[in-house]
Length: 355
Image (cartoon, rainbow, N blue to C red; front, side, top):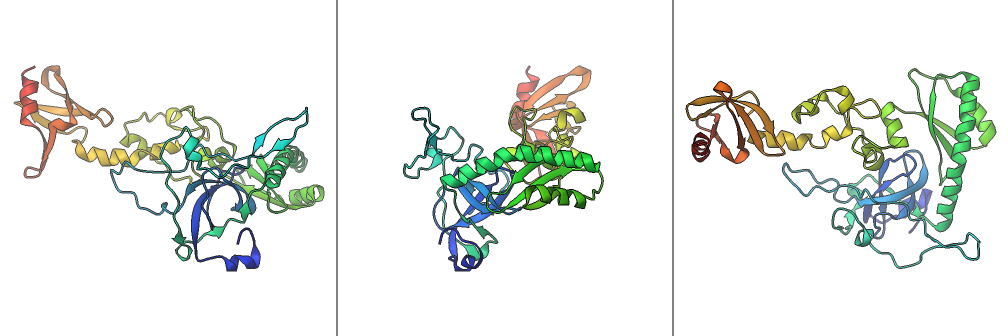
């Protein structure tokens, strides 16, 4: 039951394997089903948000619905190293003849430089999931065709930019993509105002003779599609790891004691860094184990103020009278439920006063 659209979708089994499939063109994710085991890096032709297109399997999806438990260190995500398989190219006598590797399927993680041990996919009841089926595994001809279409995209962008200039439309063309599974080309653009591009579509249809789709995206989506290097030196998170642009607030930066300088906590898109949300839950959970900043603790006969809480080093800084400063580990603190306040353990008080 491999590969088929339309009526044959109804013949699919009620159980199978589900995978997270990433579109290399738009870097968007989709959960798709297949009737056998696939490993990260497998190239497939699968439904996407924009139509049937080439995709790459990045993770098993049968465990994605598991709820996060606070404090759980075994959090798993997509494989950041999954790439399209394009065969092994060899040259013979100067001819660019490509010989595709026909070795048995092997789990990519066995030879990967990456992060976590692999988890074998498991069969699930597909009636419980709203998923579409992978159309087929990508063949060498599919990969060759995908590369040919990719080579045409730069010329398509040039033509579209010329037509935008002729029509004097207030829009910025971001990128262009030809779908592999159907005759359609998509033009992604940004604009500050609503744009009437009906005449532009007619111009493009007369040139390309296929279905034309123009999609307006935001500034964060522009970074997600184009990609680039972030301030950390890695690829943009929205481009390499996720297509979900979750809200990020300044409160997340405050919770992590980060600088509130917008230049330091904003990404190239001009919005707050997506990574501010990654560790927010950790800091929020860990701060329950520390007295709030600004609160006061009694150390011997001195009442000292908490001036800093460092979650990473598991220490707090106290300041007292006459300029006295103390650094105490988190292990020195205990919350007294009876008095409803934080206290310093006696053994640490004695050690501190003896200094």
